[in-house]
Amino acid sequence: SLLRRVSSHFKSSDSPDAPTLPQETIDRIKLLDKFMVGASQSRYFAMALFDLVLHSRPPPYEHEGRSGLSIEELYTSFIATHTALRQLPGTHPCASWYHLVIGYDA
Image 1 (cartoon, rainbow, N blue to C red):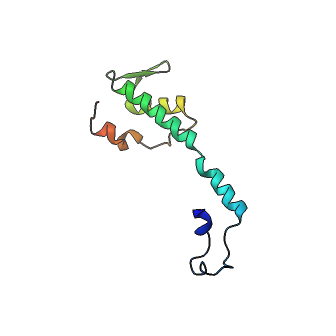
Image 2: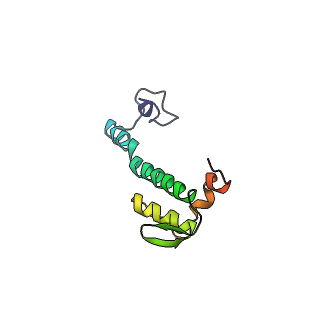
Image 3: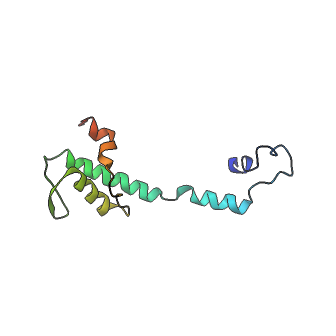
């Protein structure tokens, strides 16, 4: 495997007795290959739902029985409802979402 081939020190990799990662470690790394994929996919799902609401009605927004929500509050509500993730305090993910910033409406 690629991991096996690159798991030795670069200065001694030509030597047949060069130390490499144990197979057990390589197996554990491979098991982690899909770690957090579900969290990532649920975030995209929440963002898609948020986007649909955002582009289907004017503000103020409603979600989960709460009304008068700003864009940031709406985003936070969707993330909290549909993922196990929580938004970090003081961050503004909507400001870095290119699709929203450029005013793209498909």
